[in-house]
Image (cartoon, rainbow, N blue to C red; front, top):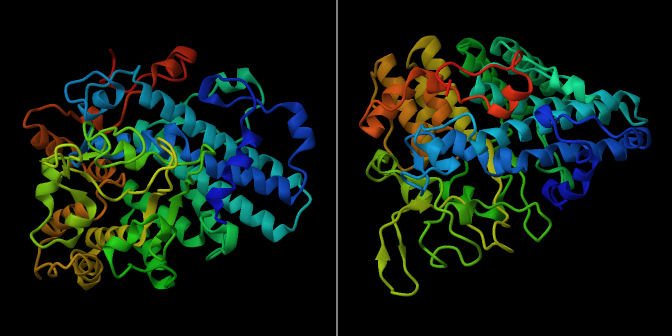
Length: 479
């Protein structure tokens, strides 16, 4: 039994209360009095905090729209439509877009879950070593969610304790993103000291020490602190606890979840319990009926663009593993040229109820981030070449040619990340991190669609309406 099989029962801990600003509802007094007393209670609360990551507004749906469909890698079926995901995909978003509204609310719900653990764990009767581990897990989860928020919206409210009154919930204002990043760094620095190297049994899937280190390395890379990113990612590499799987195809079967390359996955579990994932059905071609997915509705989301398909070099083994160029219609028997992702395949229990986890951090990402950080610090030296070439070797590609300039090597890393991590929610934030989003996306659209203000999303209008003095709209979205 893994972590994803026990999340549902734990989530009841954190689902009481009213709906309001940030969804940071005050915890019911009776629940507080009778809960958070011992190790069992705290384990249920921590597990519930993990479960928040699987919500619709986080990795269950919103994240791949925010982080992948926004980019030149993938698109959504509703071309020219006005549905929320089509608006996001086409840079036609208003502040009333439902995806960003739910992302904001669900991510702050997840932060509330982590804050609740941190606020109550000191009073629980339990072994102190386990207490420290739970603190590390909660701080990792809080950091991950704030990282997603600050990359998406820029300045955001920084809430670090359980909200106990509705008025308090309404009072939180946006703070400069530098403060948010400082807290993320503090959380992850503490988490890496408290988290174990690995888990066994039902604890598999929880955050490890190297997951905290890798996420901290990504945070440093995002904020431009390349020397610290290089050092922190090197710690993961030198630790030897994770490695590239020999076969890229072995990453994706549901039976191989939480494998030796996976530093952290959001756990899903099918079976009619409300903890399954919808990726395979949602990523199938919209008009494919039952030709691709046997159970559920083909959603036509996160579909590969012609840009992504063309980005794979000749002979790149990852292309055939990552995407199909179409499907055979099971009624007509004819091939339909309608590309889709192959990374998330499973026979669903019911519609949108499959076993596919969402990969947040894996070792190939660590190697490519390390190559990027080394290049920024020292140029394309041997260490950087070794890291990126390890990823290319598994893809059955030749090593990069020697003698590349720093700028050319940086573009080579961008390209390698595009195809290695396709469909996994990295491309948009990679482009923003390197300041390339306007040039790349306007080339993709073949028109000046994207402007610099699009590097962040609009603040949900519901949050501005609740607290207009403390939460104001991002520049460029005043409509």
